[in-house]
Amino acid sequence: MAQLQDQPTLVEQVVNAIISEIVDGELPSNSRLIQDDLARAYGVSRQPVQQALLLLRERGLVREAPGRGLVVSPIDPEFVRRLYEVRAMLDGLAARLAAERNAARARQEGPAFIAAGRAAVGNGSLGDQIEADMKFHAFVVELSENPLIGETTAPHWPYLRRVMGEVLRDDVQMPQTILGEHVAILEAIIAGDGALAEKLSREHISRAADIFVQRLQAQQAASEKEMSQRRSRRIR
Image (tube, rainbow, N blue to C red; front, top):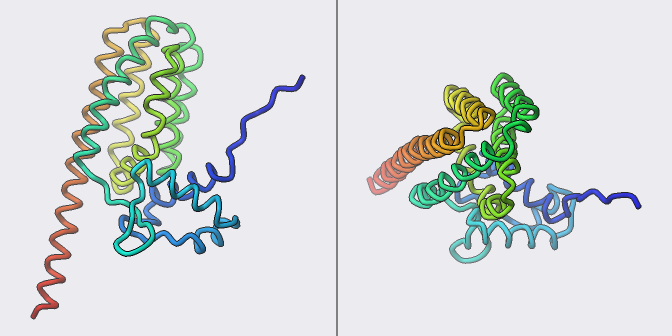
């Protein structure tokens, strides 16, 4: 009997399309999401768009607008900090287990993920960089042989993608730094050094969180200052 391949449902495709536009900055914070417009843009009916927006609301990427409808949620730096605290613990555990259980497989298959990350940094594509990052971490989780780690983090990846897109869009140095840290984590896993792999992985996530939160706070402060100046000019 032929094995069936999982294909994204229409709703999942719409979810991914909206997330991509948010990550790329085409749908910035507080952008109003009109179902009919999205349905026409994606060439689908209103039903999958409606279901996709409900899923995105549950994941914190969109929220109820004043009055009626939905808008893209502003990023909450404090929520980002808490999310990365949890992720640091889970990624650290995954790296430790990967080193203890699958060092040989990491040696054989891991370099391809590093090569993909290097290519993404080289071509400058934000989408490729985020995809390469996600695939590297998913590979480490797979090596851990603990599916609960991936199942726990999966619902938060859309929000994590958005955070990365918001911060990395104008940063030419951070992608190279992330890649270098991936190389170090993989080397520790290949060496079978679980303690080092866990330490590097936790530091990798915690360092990224500190940078991301600081930049998000700076962006919000600049935005609030600009809005205050606009209000002041209107009053005069």
